[in-house]
Image (cartoon, rainbow, N blue to C red; front, top):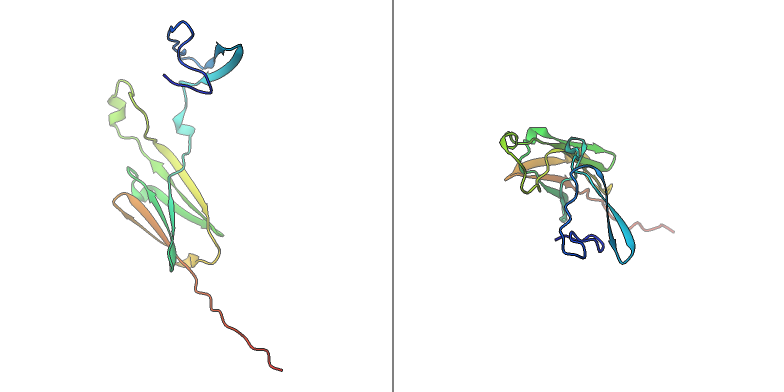
Length: 156
């Protein structure tokens, strides 16, 4: 049973309501309130671009961006930098085993294009960025610039 803001999948007579497989609004009436729910079974995943999850670590000497990329060939990953915006993008290709499947029982994995942009501080050595992949995790290391601080006395 699912609930969406008071909408359930059963009506007051305990008769189960199954949504149609067509794209149209489904309405239920509870306490004289109408709530419309759009069901879209023919969703086109090929046009979706999802964002990969990232962790951003601040160490004394660098910023490290960590992102899991399971199922993605490292050759299919692009890392771009424009000013102080780092973008990680790529494509996770669907395995051929999906073609042989009669139906999808649970669908939680996403296949297709992904992109993630991160705004970084400007005090980083952008010309020394390094990216490595180990155990299906990409690590992008950007060293911090060391700024010299010095007190200056004013001569009288």
